[in-house]
Length: 368
Length: 145
Ligand SMILES: Cc1cc2nc3c(=O)[nH]c(=O)nc-3n(C[C@H](O)[C@H](O)[C@H](O)COP(=O)(O)OP(=O)(O)OC[C@H]3O[C@@H](n4cnc5c(N)ncnc54)[C@H](O)[C@@H]3O)c2cc1C
Ligand code: SF4
Ligand code: SF4
Image (cartoon, rainbow over all chains, first blue to last red):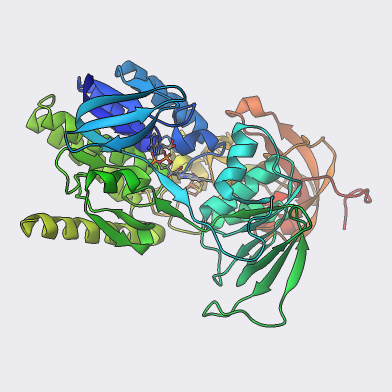
């Protein structure tokens, strides 16, 4: 059985960051991802990213992915694609499979960076062809270069809903409306400005009631809601559309972490169920670290830096970095992350993270 | 004279505008603060207009002609606008402010794949404009509305 210093599951920004940092320090690293190309969410993102210069801000997502892959190659990271990790056993071995084989390997450290899954909504007709998630729409237009339809309604005005709407327009589709149940847009004003200028109305205090169509989606019934999200009778309207994109948040992909035996926690603002973890991404399982959307839904910049932090932690624990070196690296990365968790949008994530960290320490201090 | 104008109303973790400006005309003191501009330092290079992921940086020329001003903004849709074409000029709410005339289309290869359009609009309305419609306006009289 092949043995590595570090096995990283998931090659999104978090997994790449972790693999790069531990690889750079001299660790032997396996980075496995189920997709046929690495980069996680990054390769679907054709828009320019937010964040600071250190986070490649102003660069388009897929180009950030390319830069990270080059860094990973320089750090001698072994990347295995189309490889799904399906088991983690008590003796520390990891099982993975490809199309035609299943194999086991062992890692001294395991870093889980499995990202998130998209939430769905329940309403009559939500199984009709044409009703898809925002991520699916993005994969279709930006990766596979096919349009899901010609006219879309998007549910959710968070950054993902706004950006995906913009990208559907760029792909040549029409977006009839973006529906938002809250009384105001929940994503950034600058992103909302971009789609509004392009002619897309954002209907606040609106939700989807029903998707209708003979064999596939033909029209969407929408209605207004009040401050308590209760339907206002008589406000129903019908919008013609062949595509309905659901963009109502993400939930961490916690299954592998739970399988390892990591203690789980719940935090609404960070996406729901997630593994309890410390400031340096330790879980309640020794030798298992987490990073990125799995440890709380944020953005690519925080995911990348959390991954880097986990990578530094593993490299230091392996004795590949001196205490002084790792402490300095950790401080540098943590101050960048802290900067991303400021401002009106970031503060809630900061306080939520602090709660998770303190519950982690309570749990560990409480003698398990 | 073309001069920088920024409409970035929220505290978001973002600062490529500052990194893009070699002249030091844009300051984002901490990552989540709103950008501040020092217009007297702006050399109208256009870097920030193309670099800003929020499409919130603009170059405005209030003295383009006797009656018209121009505004430059990124434009990321096909078809590529033609010079002289008329388009609805829009504000941030998506409302049509007036008709604008495309006076320049700066190609995508100039700034890492971002096309920038310069639109001429009536002088008194230029401060409301933030972009334009995705397709050309139906045939209208020259100058519009
Ligand atoms: C439309 C949209 C726009 C966005 N825009 C921005 C932006 O402008 N700025 C920004 O900072 N962020 C942005 N984000 C957010 C950002 O993309 C995510 O926060 C980030 O990708 C999370 O990184 P990650 O590495 O944790 O997860 P991911 O990128 O999701 O990567 C996880 C990877 O793990 C793989 N995986 C999971 N389980 C297994 C398994 N068992 N075996 C093998 N592989 C597995 C997955 O297939 C995936 O490839 C955007 C997201 C979306 C959807
Ligand atoms: S146009 Fe050039 S000089 Fe002026 S603010 Fe933008 S980047 Fe700076
Ligand atoms: S780059 Fe654009 S969106 Fe980001 S802070 Fe500067 S003006 Fe605002």
